[in-house]
Image 1 (spheres, helix red, strand yellow):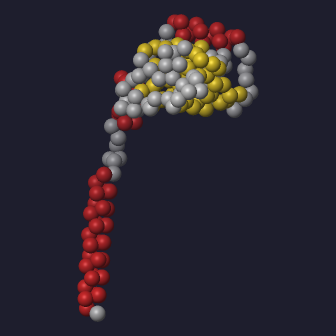
Image 2 (cartoon, rainbow, N blue to C red):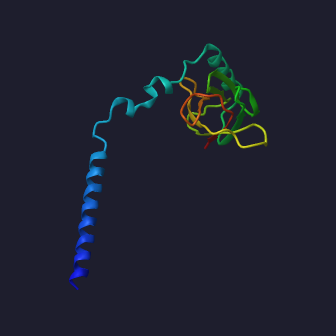
Image 3 (tube, helix red, strand yellow):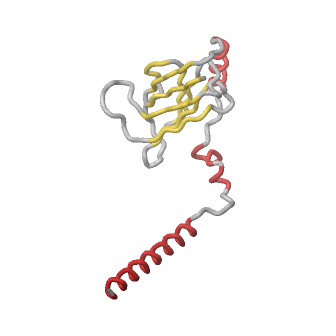
Length: 167
């Protein structure tokens, strides 16, 4: 009976010790109440900033808005090759640099849901691994900015599928 009791005491002691160490590690790992500025606004860093809107992009965006009427609800898709050419869908694609694309639509997309994924234009093969980020284009209400990167975070040209849903 005393051997069984000693084993239980030892097990409880190790459990309490383990929980104490784990709890102390969690308490130490908690972030401070005041986050550094770069954590709060990652877009302020140089690698995540959008390039300035070019005069060509502004003209194209204004012309596209004038050409189309206001939509009540719609879903717009575009498939873009890695070199920045449009494979299918609607919109105008402008390639700024390695992994940087702008897609201009004929209607305002600022209130839309923007979704993108790395993808190929053809029905063959699985696309290369990578990452993609999308955001409304600064100073252009009818455009979306897309960035593609390798899995390591290095900018690279990758084809993608973009969906914008307006409700």
